[in-house]
Image (cartoon, rainbow, N blue to C red; front, side, top):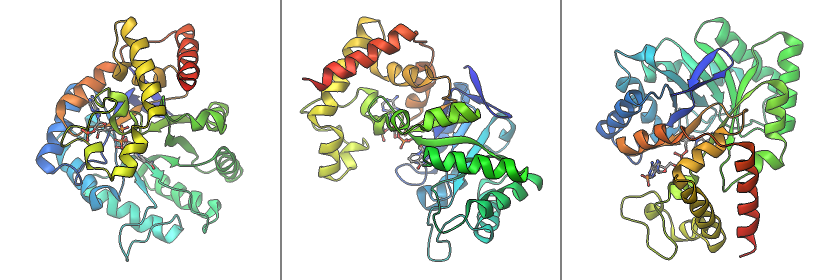
Length: 315
Ligand code: NAP
């Protein structure tokens, strides 16, 4: 497994998203996924205080008992948990949220502590000042942001630099072969400019890019899409999406690869992408995902993929 830098952190290029833990899968199943991920060389585990009603952090922490040093834990704060923990990024909220996450994770440090969503009600100076205090206290090694626009990234960078504070070293936004917003919105450019690591979420478009969903066929029982409300499922598997999926699948197959491998390889063909944190509900998914990153695309391949996508729109 190759690694890439998230500033001082050396992260595996395939990470594990832990948002299924405590929600769609229980503690035993979550531990099996973590075991398989570690065995496959995955070192970056991405969770959040809100995942699984806070159980994701607990399950991950316990699954890493006795091998904490083999893992980098990335977690997030700022989303609403309950009436007493309404989220946000105020200094008072951050101090409590960090201690709660450390306790749930059963660890003395968070490797990457990410602001889950921008908080329009709190000045970014207040947020960054509080995060800088956590870094200085040794509770947090690096800080990152999520769901930030290019303008927000620029502003945060300026504030940290002006004050000499810890700076966001990563940006986690949605990005995949099906959702290319960060390219169009200048987010990848802002990351490259300031040497920030980009961490794409929903890299498999909730499993659509794993290749397991077929046009016109009902999703297999137990899959994420099978459990979705019908309107969201229809949107996720619309004709426009399936045109693109089928075209990309055919392109990958002519090169002896799968759509799943293409989904990882294409993200990692962008140097600004540090780690692809696909979620998994089964150990074999984590193993397949770890192996998928072995395919390295050339610049010519990436250009061909753009052409395949453009052509699929005309169908
Ligand atoms: P994803 O990676 O696009 O999809 C994961 C789902 O795809 C899995 O739950 C599994 O679905 C299926 N899958 C994964 N590997 C597979 C394989 N090899 N073969 C077949 N199916 C496979 O979406 P995600 O897990 O929701 O997102 C990844 C991570 O991003 C999350 O875990 C979370 O850490 C992070 N995230 C962050 C934000 C944010 O706002 N910052 C938002 C969303 C997610 P089944 O359940 O069908 O098995």
